[in-house]
Amino acid sequence: MKKSLFKPKSWFARSDEISVLRLYGAIGASRGIGGRGLSHPPLEKAIDAAFEGKRVKAVALAINSPGGAPGQSSLIARHIRRLADEKEIPVIAFCEDVAASGGYLLACAADEIFVNEYSIAGSIGVISASFGAQDAIKRIGIERRIHTAGEHKVLMDPFSEEKPEDVARLKALQKEIHARFIAWVKGSRRDRLVEGVKFFEGDVWVGEQAVEVGLADGVGELQPQMKQRFGKDVTFKEYGGAKRGLLSRLMGRGVTGPTLGTDIGAGAADATLDAVEQRLAWGRYGL
Image (tube, rainbow, N blue to C red; front, side, top):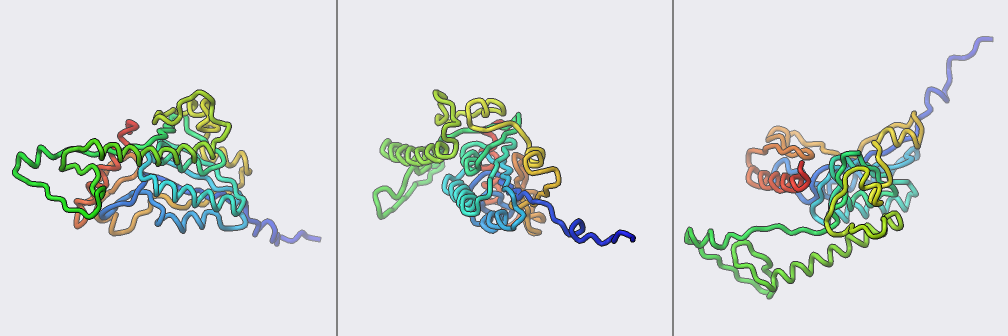
Protein backbone atom coordinates (compact mmCIF):
# COMPACT_ATOMS: atom_id res chain seq x y z
CA MET A 1 0.00 0.00 0.00
CA LYS A 2 1.44 3.36 -1.04
CA LYS A 3 1.90 6.03 1.55
CA SER A 4 -0.22 9.12 1.05
CA LEU A 5 1.63 12.25 0.05
CA PHE A 6 -0.98 14.33 1.83
CA LYS A 7 0.44 15.24 5.21
CA PRO A 8 -1.75 17.99 6.60
CA LYS A 9 0.11 18.20 9.88
CA SER A 10 3.45 18.86 8.23
CA TRP A 11 2.01 21.05 5.48
CA PHE A 12 0.01 23.31 7.74
CA ALA A 13 2.01 23.22 10.95
CA ARG A 14 3.10 26.72 11.93
CA SER A 15 6.15 27.40 14.04
CA ASP A 16 6.31 29.43 17.23
CA GLU A 17 6.66 33.15 16.72
CA ILE A 18 8.78 35.88 18.29
CA SER A 19 7.46 39.43 17.99
CA VAL A 20 10.24 41.95 17.41
CA LEU A 21 9.31 45.47 18.48
CA ARG A 22 11.79 47.97 17.06
CA LEU A 23 12.30 51.06 19.19
CA TYR A 24 14.68 53.26 17.22
CA GLY A 25 15.48 56.95 17.56
CA ALA A 26 15.36 59.80 20.02
CA ILE A 27 12.21 59.81 22.16
CA GLY A 28 9.67 62.59 21.86
CA ALA A 29 7.02 64.01 19.54
CA SER A 30 8.41 64.97 16.14
CA ARG A 31 7.96 68.22 14.29
CA GLY A 32 7.66 68.81 10.59
CA ILE A 33 7.63 66.57 7.55
CA GLY A 34 9.62 63.40 8.00
CA GLY A 35 10.13 63.90 11.77
CA ARG A 36 11.46 60.75 13.42
CA GLY A 37 10.89 61.09 17.14
CA LEU A 38 9.96 57.86 18.91
CA SER A 39 6.67 58.46 20.72
CA HIS A 40 3.80 56.46 22.18
CA PRO A 41 0.77 57.37 19.98
CA PRO A 42 2.23 55.98 16.70
CA LEU A 43 3.45 52.86 18.55
CA GLU A 44 0.23 51.92 20.39
CA LYS A 45 -1.13 49.61 17.69
CA ALA A 46 2.28 48.06 17.07
CA ILE A 47 2.74 47.26 20.76
CA ASP A 48 -0.75 45.74 20.98
CA ALA A 49 -0.18 43.66 17.84
CA ALA A 50 3.18 42.38 19.11
CA PHE A 51 1.44 40.64 22.02
CA GLU A 52 -1.42 39.16 19.99
CA GLY A 53 -1.56 35.66 18.56
CA LYS A 54 -1.49 32.18 20.06
CA ARG A 55 1.90 31.41 18.54
CA VAL A 56 3.71 34.38 20.17
CA LYS A 57 6.15 32.93 22.67
CA ALA A 58 8.02 36.12 23.52
CA VAL A 59 8.42 39.76 22.58
CA ALA A 60 11.92 40.99 21.76
CA LEU A 61 12.64 44.71 22.08
CA ALA A 62 15.29 45.92 19.62
CA ILE A 63 16.39 49.20 21.19
CA ASN A 64 18.59 51.87 19.68
CA SER A 65 17.81 55.15 21.42
CA PRO A 66 19.76 57.92 23.17
CA GLY A 67 16.68 58.84 25.19
CA GLY A 68 14.55 61.96 25.15
CA ALA A 69 11.19 62.92 26.62
CA PRO A 70 10.60 61.13 29.95
CA GLY A 71 6.81 61.14 29.56
CA GLN A 72 6.89 59.37 26.20
CA SER A 73 9.54 56.95 27.49
CA SER A 74 7.30 56.02 30.41
CA LEU A 75 4.16 55.66 28.28
CA ILE A 76 5.87 53.24 25.90
CA ALA A 77 7.59 51.23 28.64
CA ARG A 78 4.50 50.90 30.84
CA HIS A 79 2.35 49.86 27.89
CA ILE A 80 4.80 47.05 27.11
CA ARG A 81 5.07 45.96 30.73
CA ARG A 82 1.31 46.02 31.24
CA LEU A 83 0.66 43.69 28.29
CA ALA A 84 3.55 41.41 29.29
CA ASP A 85 1.99 40.91 32.72
CA GLU A 86 -1.59 40.58 31.44
CA LYS A 87 -0.74 38.02 28.75
CA GLU A 88 2.11 36.35 30.65
CA ILE A 89 4.45 36.71 27.69
CA PRO A 90 8.17 37.17 28.42
CA VAL A 91 9.85 40.33 27.13
CA ILE A 92 13.56 40.41 26.36
CA ALA A 93 15.39 43.62 25.41
CA PHE A 94 18.34 43.76 23.03
CA CYS A 95 20.36 46.98 23.10
CA GLU A 96 22.13 47.98 19.91
CA ASP A 97 24.31 51.11 19.62
CA VAL A 98 22.72 52.94 22.54
CA ALA A 99 20.12 52.31 25.23
CA ALA A 100 20.74 55.39 27.33
CA SER A 101 18.57 57.61 29.51
CA GLY A 102 15.01 57.12 28.20
CA GLY A 103 16.35 54.37 25.95
CA TYR A 104 17.48 52.42 29.01
CA LEU A 105 14.13 53.18 30.66
CA LEU A 106 12.54 51.33 27.71
CA ALA A 107 14.90 48.38 28.21
CA CYS A 108 13.77 48.13 31.82
CA ALA A 109 10.28 47.20 30.61
CA ALA A 110 11.79 43.79 29.79
CA ASP A 111 12.31 40.75 31.99
CA GLU A 112 15.89 40.45 30.75
CA ILE A 113 18.30 42.82 29.02
CA PHE A 114 21.03 41.87 26.56
CA VAL A 115 23.64 44.22 25.14
CA ASN A 116 26.00 44.10 22.20
CA GLU A 117 29.69 44.18 23.08
CA TYR A 118 29.76 47.79 21.82
CA SER A 119 26.45 48.93 23.30
CA ILE A 120 26.32 52.03 25.48
CA ALA A 121 23.85 51.60 28.35
CA GLY A 122 22.81 53.63 31.38
CA SER A 123 22.81 57.42 31.65
CA ILE A 124 20.17 57.27 34.37
CA GLY A 125 19.71 60.96 34.96
CA VAL A 126 17.78 64.02 33.77
CA ILE A 127 19.06 66.79 31.53
CA SER A 128 17.65 70.14 30.46
CA ALA A 129 19.66 72.05 27.87
CA SER A 130 18.99 75.60 26.72
CA PHE A 131 20.84 78.78 25.77
CA GLY A 132 20.98 82.43 26.75
CA ALA A 133 20.44 84.98 23.98
CA GLN A 134 19.44 88.02 26.00
CA ASP A 135 22.62 89.94 25.10
CA ALA A 136 22.31 89.07 21.42
CA ILE A 137 18.80 90.50 21.07
CA LYS A 138 19.86 93.66 22.90
CA ARG A 139 22.69 94.21 20.43
CA ILE A 140 20.31 94.11 17.48
CA GLY A 141 17.74 96.33 19.19
CA ILE A 142 15.07 93.79 20.11
CA GLU A 143 13.11 94.20 23.33
CA ARG A 144 11.68 91.07 24.95
CA ARG A 145 8.07 91.48 26.16
CA ILE A 146 6.33 88.78 28.21
CA HIS A 147 2.93 89.06 29.86
CA THR A 148 1.63 86.14 31.93
CA ALA A 149 -1.18 85.17 34.27
CA GLY A 150 0.59 83.01 36.81
CA GLU A 151 3.85 83.69 38.62
CA HIS A 152 5.63 80.60 37.29
CA LYS A 153 4.24 80.57 33.75
CA VAL A 154 7.64 81.48 32.27
CA LEU A 155 10.54 79.27 33.25
CA MET A 156 14.10 79.62 31.93
CA ASP A 157 13.20 81.89 29.01
CA PRO A 158 16.31 81.93 26.75
CA PHE A 159 15.78 85.59 25.81
CA SER A 160 15.69 86.84 29.42
CA GLU A 161 18.26 86.95 32.21
CA GLU A 162 18.55 83.67 34.09
CA LYS A 163 16.92 83.89 37.51
CA PRO A 164 18.17 81.89 40.53
CA GLU A 165 14.57 81.06 41.50
CA ASP A 166 13.93 79.64 38.01
CA VAL A 167 17.03 77.45 38.25
CA ALA A 168 15.92 76.22 41.69
CA ARG A 169 12.46 75.37 40.36
CA LEU A 170 13.91 73.55 37.34
CA LYS A 171 16.20 71.49 39.57
CA ALA A 172 13.23 70.58 41.79
CA LEU A 173 11.35 69.31 38.72
CA GLN A 174 14.39 67.35 37.56
CA LYS A 175 14.80 65.81 41.01
CA GLU A 176 11.23 64.51 40.95
CA ILE A 177 11.61 63.02 37.45
CA HIS A 178 14.97 61.51 38.42
CA ALA A 179 13.45 59.87 41.52
CA ARG A 180 10.75 58.22 39.39
CA PHE A 181 13.35 57.05 36.87
CA ILE A 182 15.43 55.50 39.66
CA ALA A 183 12.38 53.75 41.10
CA TRP A 184 11.55 52.27 37.68
CA VAL A 185 15.09 50.93 37.20
CA LYS A 186 15.27 49.48 40.71
CA GLY A 187 11.84 47.87 40.29
CA SER A 188 13.01 46.23 37.07
CA ARG A 189 16.56 45.18 37.93
CA ARG A 190 16.00 44.51 41.66
CA ASP A 191 18.86 42.55 43.22
CA ARG A 192 20.76 42.29 39.93
CA LEU A 193 22.23 45.76 40.46
CA VAL A 194 25.67 45.47 42.07
CA GLU A 195 25.88 47.25 45.41
CA GLY A 196 28.19 50.24 45.68
CA VAL A 197 27.98 51.23 42.01
CA LYS A 198 26.80 54.81 41.37
CA PHE A 199 24.16 53.98 38.77
CA PHE A 200 22.11 57.13 39.07
CA GLU A 201 24.64 59.90 38.39
CA GLY A 202 24.28 59.82 34.60
CA ASP A 203 27.25 57.53 33.88
CA VAL A 204 27.24 54.99 31.05
CA TRP A 205 28.72 51.50 30.67
CA VAL A 206 29.82 49.67 27.53
CA GLY A 207 28.95 46.07 26.64
CA GLU A 208 30.33 43.62 29.19
CA GLN A 209 30.74 46.43 31.73
CA ALA A 210 26.96 46.83 31.80
CA VAL A 211 26.62 43.11 32.51
CA GLU A 212 29.23 43.19 35.28
CA VAL A 213 27.41 45.93 37.21
CA GLY A 214 23.95 44.44 36.66
CA LEU A 215 22.45 46.84 34.15
CA ALA A 216 22.23 43.96 31.68
CA ASP A 217 21.99 40.16 31.92
CA GLY A 218 24.31 39.17 29.11
CA VAL A 219 26.02 39.96 25.83
CA GLY A 220 24.11 38.63 22.86
CA GLU A 221 22.27 39.33 19.63
CA LEU A 222 18.53 39.06 19.11
CA GLN A 223 18.03 36.21 16.66
CA PRO A 224 20.75 33.84 17.95
CA GLN A 225 19.61 34.31 21.54
CA MET A 226 15.94 33.81 20.76
CA LYS A 227 16.59 30.74 18.59
CA GLN A 228 18.74 29.23 21.31
CA ARG A 229 15.93 29.74 23.81
CA PHE A 230 12.84 28.98 21.71
CA GLY A 231 14.17 26.66 19.01
CA LYS A 232 15.89 27.07 15.65
CA ASP A 233 12.57 26.91 13.75
CA VAL A 234 11.05 29.89 15.54
CA THR A 235 9.94 32.70 13.21
CA PHE A 236 10.29 36.45 13.71
CA LYS A 237 7.66 39.08 12.99
CA GLU A 238 8.61 42.74 13.20
CA TYR A 239 6.57 45.65 14.52
CA GLY A 240 7.30 49.36 14.93
CA GLY A 241 10.57 50.32 13.31
CA ALA A 242 11.25 53.24 11.01
CA LYS A 243 8.73 52.99 8.19
CA ARG A 244 8.16 56.25 6.37
CA GLY A 245 5.32 57.49 4.23
CA LEU A 246 5.61 58.46 0.57
CA LEU A 247 5.54 62.20 1.32
CA SER A 248 8.31 61.83 3.89
CA ARG A 249 10.50 59.94 1.41
CA LEU A 250 9.88 62.52 -1.31
CA MET A 251 10.71 65.46 0.96
CA GLY A 252 14.04 64.16 2.21
CA ARG A 253 16.03 61.46 3.90
CA GLY A 254 15.07 62.28 7.47
CA VAL A 255 16.87 60.84 10.47
CA THR A 256 17.50 57.13 10.90
CA GLY A 257 19.34 56.03 14.02
CA PRO A 258 22.51 58.03 14.49
CA THR A 259 22.66 59.21 10.87
CA LEU A 260 21.62 62.80 10.21
CA GLY A 261 19.74 63.48 6.99
CA THR A 262 17.98 66.51 5.52
CA ASP A 263 14.31 67.42 5.13
CA ILE A 264 13.28 70.17 2.72
CA GLY A 265 9.98 71.68 1.66
CA ALA A 266 7.01 73.09 3.55
CA GLY A 267 8.10 71.75 6.92
CA ALA A 268 11.80 72.48 6.47
CA ALA A 269 12.26 74.73 9.51
CA ASP A 270 10.58 72.38 11.98
CA ALA A 271 12.13 69.30 10.38
CA THR A 272 15.60 70.85 10.58
CA LEU A 273 15.14 71.70 14.26
CA ASP A 274 13.93 68.17 14.92
CA ALA A 275 16.98 66.78 13.12
CA VAL A 276 19.37 69.03 15.06
CA GLU A 277 17.88 67.97 18.39
CA GLN A 278 18.17 64.31 17.47
CA ARG A 279 21.73 64.85 16.25
CA LEU A 280 22.62 66.40 19.61
CA ALA A 281 20.98 63.51 21.48
CA TRP A 282 23.06 60.93 19.58
CA GLY A 283 26.15 63.16 19.77
CA ARG A 284 26.24 62.91 23.56
CA TYR A 285 27.38 59.31 23.09
CA GLY A 286 29.88 59.97 20.31
CA LEU A 287 27.61 58.74 17.50
